[in-house]
Image (tube, rainbow, N blue to C red; front, side, top):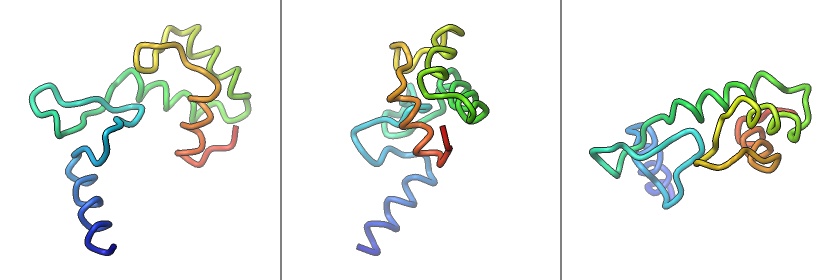
Length: 92
């Protein structure tokens, strides 16, 4: 277990994929599909989510959609906003 955790942490630090799913805010590197790079549009949406803790997840999703931000090419939903908030330990 210790070696597995250490190996996953090493991959994370090097920006490598550790699962089949690509986290929101990241995308595959165009030249190396094993590496992840930031997705600027999704990273900006995450910053907005962080700065709107006093609003409901539905209100935040509506705001992001109104500002034409997309999440994986699709509109934001309250569920996606809730997942981001939970992952970043935010209270929405």
